[in-house]
Length: 221
Image 1 (cartoon, rainbow, N blue to C red):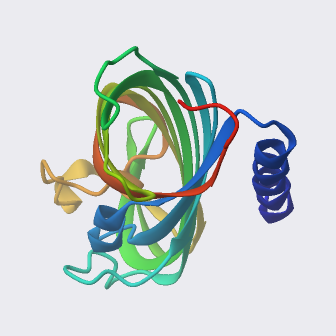
Image 2 (tube, one colour):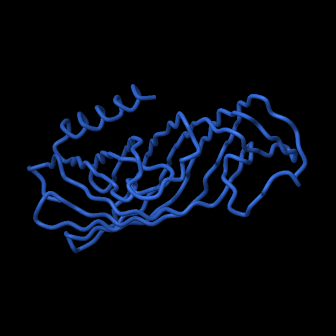
């Protein structure tokens, strides 16, 4: 997966240098560093050709700067890959651009957990140790605004909605089947307690900071 990510990044870079009318932006999403469960540093590249934008993002795991929801998990591993396709709408204001698009995101989440329970096919199981694998797939449409000035920096505000598919699997040791009276099934129970595939609504709200790495000089946009 890492090799494929590097190939995509190189493709965007060379593509931007191969055509005289293209632009290349590098972006970060500061709010992702604050997430209490999946804190990350995301780095994105957008290759813009005329009114179309093609964006690839790779996010790397860090420790959250605020709350920690992972205190009872060990051997924690996760990352995120995100692809966006944009279409920029016509706008007379050169410092403010509107755009719409489609977003796909993949976030795998792995860790070990002890002395807990999960539910599968209507049955409840308690375990001593479990290796938990959670895969999350996001499919969303979005609308955004891009603000810029005379410098190479720009700021983006993006909102969107769609669905997410959550797939949870457990590889357990010393598990036993129990009845639901022996577990505390709170309304806020963690998603790792429900094995299988679920589809839920998903909302996207984010602020991004971008920097223009390359721009065509023979045609003004």
